[in-house]
Image: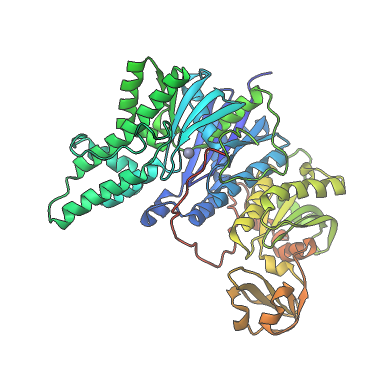
Length: 344
Length: 233
Ligand SMILES: [Zn+2]
């Protein structure tokens, strides 16, 4: 059998993503985003995102098919994010994917969003080494995963116990008067700053703390306190130094824990994913520390790190290839789908 | 993907056509198949009304599969899709609308949106359904069935219903009048869609936009404070 053509749907947050892959080859990656509509609220408003998904769904499917130069009837299987994510947003993509699967008579795979973030790297760097470690960081998740078999078995080693790393970027950006989403403007401001100017706290790095869990709430509060103290004293806020020092704290904790997890588990491949993986300091520090520890680092391009439909298609393709059974016709969405459930 | 031999939908005017009707505006999802003819007659071939609460996404395509099986037909036989646009609770409502749009798109058939309240009861009436937050969605209709007012959303106490009231009988006390229980039906959806189905030229081809639900309320624009997908059981 030739490699399967898989259509993937992703609507777990504010991006309407529809992508096509054949085997592990990326054919198209169509995206619509409602980010601009959320800006003034400083965070994604679920109802606004859901309304935008509905409007964008069919046109985004058309763009994905046109970019790939295929017909819907050519598709061999359909994959869709079944969770985790925002319930109302997930349901638009799930219902659409179920309808296309029914109308086209193709199998449907409801998949885990986090596992899809790992799978997308195969579109750029080829077959994943198994086991691999994966560090996924975005506005919605901060997770450290052990991946013995991407199609069948993914284990959670650690996760954030409070804010996602991306949320901390958004909140610190707000404190500094930078736009939402906070990742890119902080990255940019930090380039002119000194990462060691301010010694912000590294959450959960004490000897008795959970070795692979994360906490960014304390860091976020520390930054806000530091900035507010300056403002109260009538002193100027050194935005570049604050941004650089905050970013350094985040990158330091994330990479230190990921490298430690690799060493502890005897795993020599690390995959980065999620929107925060586009952060230049995180990438640089990960490269440095992985090189020092003899770990092969794999990072998809920023476009594929953020949420998109191709990542879901990539995981779907893996599932088809592994002969995993498709989802039941009455599959639903699960906003807190555990990572151990690769497909449901 | 047009099927060879299928009636091009631009010629619906002249043909008896097979219509799939869907509605998820209330807690009972409706999926029905009907033969509709340009004289307005609709013969319902199969129908499922499933009390699905907030499980529309789980159960809707299952119900579609069932009505097709009941009627001994397949997706390839469909000529058009009709969907209720609400008003109704948003999350469930969108499931029906996006399902209808996607089914229609995948089969290259038109999708027609109608006000869900139009598909409840018939003749002169006021229709009320549950809008949650202690409110009702409502619309009033003239004797010939045309909508005279609405759809709107109000506290039942603030409504002065005209004519007999049909719909969600749980609101009788708060409306102060009897409410005859009635729900969305396939026949009702077809009746509400008749004018649009009779004018296929109005359903422009590949550029047709997805019908927009009758939300009636603005989004609650409160950013989530705790969107943290859990990654451990
Ligand atoms: Zn994501």
